[in-house]
Image (cartoon, rainbow, N blue to C red; front, side, top):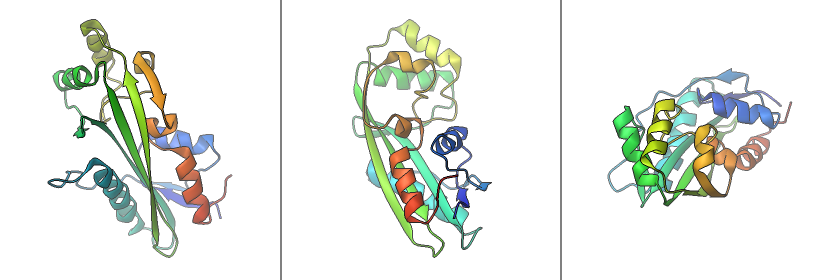
Length: 190
C-alpha cells in the first residue's frame, strides 16, 4: 500500500517525505488549537500536537493512514513560540545566541484501523554567539515566518556550530522515525 494522508501543509515535510520515496495522496493541514496546557512538559506538548493534528485529519478520512507531525524549539526548558513580528524574532535569536537548545519533533501515524503510534526525536543544537548585525540580518530574511524559532535550512545554517541528532527532524520531520512508522502501518515507498 502506498496511499496515505499528510496532516500538514508544510512544504518542508512534503519534500522530506519525497526525498525518501513516500508521496502522500492527500495533503491537508489540521486547524487545531496549539496552546500548551498549564504545566505541560515540552515533550508531552509536542507529542500531543502531532497526535491531535493526525487525529483531526484522520476523522475526515476514515480507513486511511495519516501522518501528523509537530516541531518545537526548547531553550532553558521553555517552548519558544512562533514570532509574530521582527521584534519578537530578534528576542528569540538573542535568547538562542551562544547557547545549546533542543529541537523536538514528534511524528504520529494513525493506521487504517485507527491505532496511533507516536515517536519523539530530540536534537541538540549549539548556536554560535550571534552579533547584533547577524541577528538583524537573519530577522530581515523573514525565513523564520511561520516557524517556531527559525528555519535551519536557510541562511541560519551558517550560524549553527553543532547539531547532535537528526537534521531532518530540525527541518520538521525526522525521516528515520517517519519511515518506520509509515512502514509499520503498511505504507511502502514509491
